[in-house]
Image 1 (cartoon, rainbow, N blue to C red):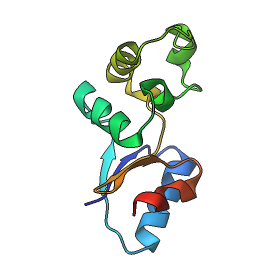
Image 2: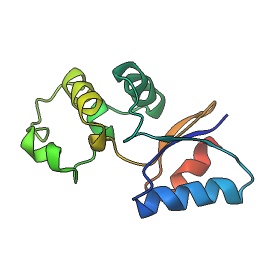
Image 3: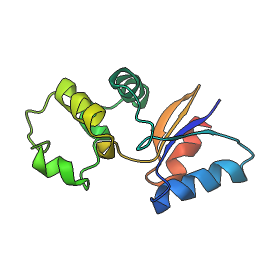
Image 4: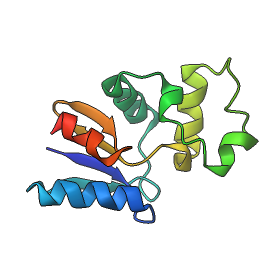
Length: 114
């Protein structure tokens, strides 16, 4: 099963979805702005990504600066809380498979978990 945390308004997210479909996959699409993942789900994906929670933060999202998330002392718990409260802060797209998870930036990065 392949899942994509997808934002229909994001061209990169659409490109990753197109790549998955072109390779014959029918992913489960989660429009995470409409149906946000829980804090526990975000934490699980961060673990699959093998990165600190701040690595999943979308720095271009308006709440990033407003909430002071660029603070070098930001903990993983604080980053997870912020993403759970403001899903727009989750970098996109994220592809999750049995082999792991990858942020689709660049688009080709998702091939590592297909």
